[in-house]
Length: 491
Image (tube, rainbow, N blue to C red; front, top):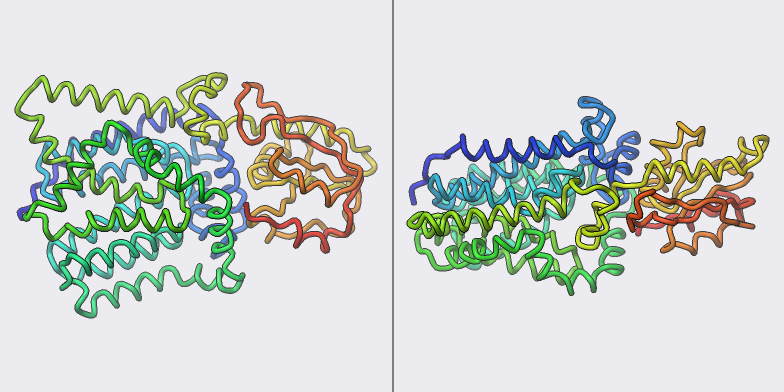
């Protein structure tokens, strides 16, 4: 099958337009709880963390160092990675035989996807993960189409770098390799090049693998906690969230792509991707993973469906205009749901669909509530007092906004914050405890606790911290060094 020329100008124009929109909206709300955690983790550089490899915290630190220590500075990289993902979508469509219209449609489809827009606004592990998966899929398609084993080292390098960000890329390998074995072309697995690719991947990932092994593989504990806590809900919502994360308006496109990969003899070399997507879904369902884990392969199916869709609508101007309006409607809805275009007081309208919107609101107010609680501690006792938070979002917020109120550095047993150590046992004074309602059991480690303030984000946004109590406790039930293993938690 002949590969069409890449129509770079229109595809890059779509990507640049989305990046410009993301940059324009980057500062409308505040930091997300995960971003606050990444910024805090970036100040403790390591080859790994309890819940993730090192790449995203290091990217957070680098982005704010280069572009400014603000939400806008932090979100330059997500916007650029989102633009790169859109360009890769056009390249995927090209690899699958799309001409000019099909490549442009692929770029537009990815630009109106809820997942692509969402991860382009926030810096998260998913942001880089989506980009990495798309790049790996493009390289694998090139390998399958050409049969040239020299693509394996590039695939290995991309996979190894992805493993420095998140371990989920192993699911992609676990779906694609059996699919290729089942439907071919098997010749790409019959020489030494796959071994070279594997060694390259391991070489990149080795520092994090060493760190995880040295610390007892905490990421496995975190993954097990996510599955145990949310696995049932993830399985129940898997199918509807696949549709919502991609966009309901794109269902006909990816269905066309799935059928094309299965039936089109000209694309028989790419049939493995049609098999890999349901395999990946089975893996995600079996492990209780989050529904978005399977979205990158669904985007590949969408790319495969863009050429037949573009041909179908090319003949009739009215049908083409109607389809374009349908895409635009889907894009506008997803912009409202995933990007900060609504006033915070109206977030309740979309927060039930996409709770990450609400997690960008109220962190300065949380620090102000903590400051109110801190003021209740007599000044002569503050030198031996401790601020303790139940989760990393609260700790990140107090680390960022607390100094303006004279608050000390916070401690927490959540995720990697536990690795950064307990307070000294000499800090035997009062404890200012901040925790949301879902974690009341933490209070049993402290004595004589009373509520001295409550968090109010000022907009009525029902996020995790809204109305969280700020408690002042007289002390701990045992020295910090004794309590610390009990205070550590991963979810």
